[in-house]
Length: 157
Image (cartoon, rainbow, N blue to C red; front, side, top):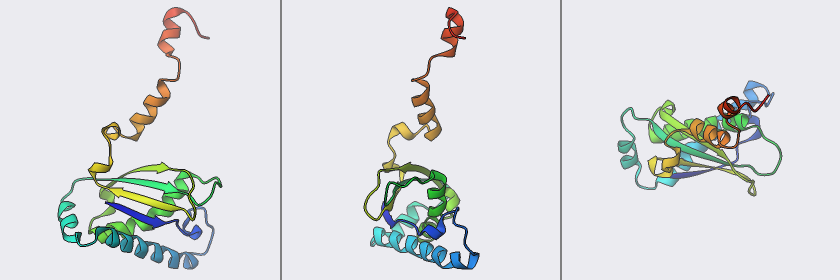
């Protein structure tokens, strides 16, 4: 299942320094938008999806952020801005959002920005089965010199 959401309101950023009351309406709207987009993507299969997601199993979720422009954004702030959409998606699916096991990716900008949320196992290739930490660590390690090699050969500092 793929859910497409609009780019979050800038007032939802964790770095937004606004009064809590001014933030309440965008939070409520984002949660409602997340639920509405989930219902729209389900069509008539709500009962089947809720039945499939019943239980205590973790639910894999891939979240792809497409910012509206090339301005620098911190990834943790994008994830924080997404929180209320996530709550709305969980509401619509009838699950607790702590069951979500998200994988975040940050893509190239698109006009007006958007967030695509992919829910379910079929959106995760086998390479992601070991988790994001394993992928990142392996890709970095293969480009660095082996510290044991330098010690054994007498090279290095």
